[in-house]
Length: 119
Image (cartoon, rainbow, N blue to C red; front, side, top):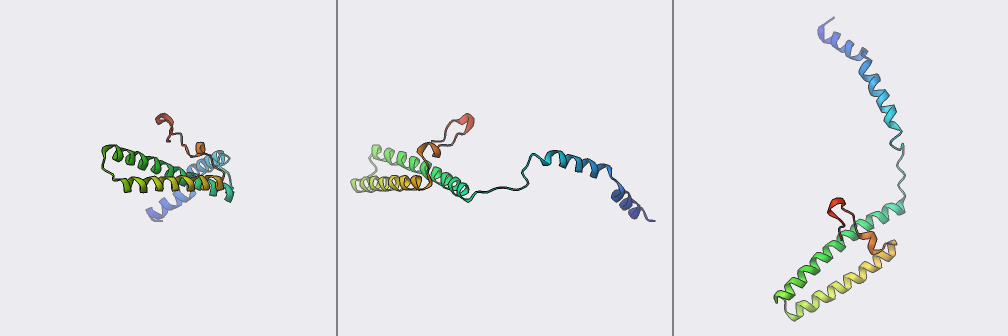
């Protein structure tokens, strides 16, 4: 028998590592569910919550930038009017979407741990 064949027999015949790994898998197996129960309504609501949170964050950033530009005088009256109308329409649509998915303003605020709240 060649050395390679001998090594292969020894590896395949070895039970120590495989048995240890199998016992370890059995021990931690109960920590994870065997089946993920994905409720389509919860998944849809969670995704909507995430998307609306990002939109709200971007809206707040854009609004702050618009206010800075207004204070600096770099926007003319037409631009100010368009921005105001855009932000009003966005706020209306956000309210509609929050109502559709049963979300409140507080649902769009993420806790970032030591950094505090996102919004």
